[in-house]
Image (cartoon, rainbow, N blue to C red; front, side, top):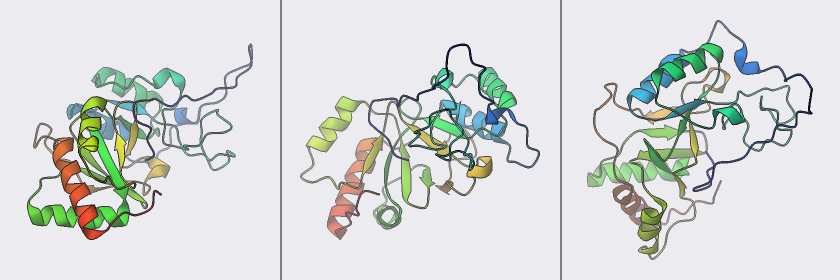
Length: 233
């Protein structure tokens, strides 16, 4: 769940002119897999823009099915350059996953939802503290190393103001705003890499996502008070 604020990553395709396009692993149709179309449609019904992600490919030197021989984010970026524009259009989403039924579902942060993430152990302790103090939280994505708390979209200037007002912001916090992507569970061979620690409401239009200021205040205060400043993983 590594993110760089405000910048979409660029992915290189080293096809030579006139060469045939490489086979796309996302176009295969495995029979034993989760309903990723349903996952994508459920996300857009919550107004979360999504895009098909690249699949993990063990045979690739990088472990990723994309054509970049130096891919540093295997399975955690859009499937190709033509799919950088995430959407909430259901017809487009259904067409994408009819062509790529095994493609992971990526939430494009910054428009329908953003996130704040931190190391898993620290996040578990912080969430417990937030619950005790009655601070509301939204959905929480969890991987082995990091958890991401989904929040309402925020602007970079607004986030800058919030951070500037803090005496100390733990270096383990990361911010997933415009230009970032988060993998949504489940996703075929990616299943198990990410799960819902706190799932979203089953009914779209339920409780709104918390404001980043509320979550940030509580996380920073909790982490600083408990001395939880885990290293950046």
